[in-house]
Length: 249
Image 1: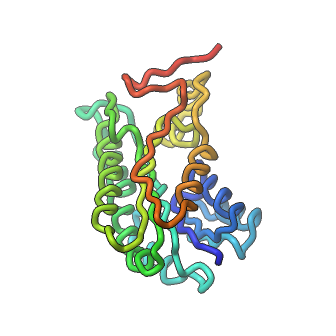
Image 2: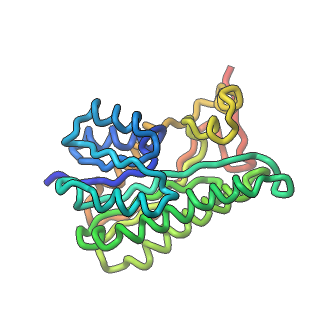
């Protein structure tokens, strides 16, 4: 039986890599995101029978509802929700931070995730499916300038574990994956600077979107009686003591 995953933030990075990994493993995927052309490219690459593009901004509840209601029959029975969509904006200390940046992070990383999860829970329970959420080490170990991003990821980490408690007895598996440094478009989006992104990852041998996608696929395909509560992967060159990074020559 072919299983179906609903993957948010599938236009780049971890989300895009996850769609590729799952489809390679025989899954169908509902791939969501704002960038229609990128989702279209995924469909062209992987096949319309394997990927259904759902173009919407996760902050727009009406658009979310319309996208869910419009799922074709082959993609309507969701077995796996991958709560991946999220972002960070700004690195200024709290007293200098932009309130608009804070609200965008809350709307994307917290409110949208909660709404989508609640809307898909009945189907996930019916299917005895799984939920995998992308939190962050920033939700466990704060750093200067992390403020609302760190807070939003702490929420994501703990909301996911709370789901695990609430879904006890339903057969639904729930996992929080909380990565450290992953080289994607994340820092480019956060800073608006390709140079800042290059400087952050330079010589650090960071994890990749494909690395995290491999973990997501592994968790999703475990036998139904096994649950991984949380994973906290980091590259070898980063550690949680001050988020030190060892640079390689």
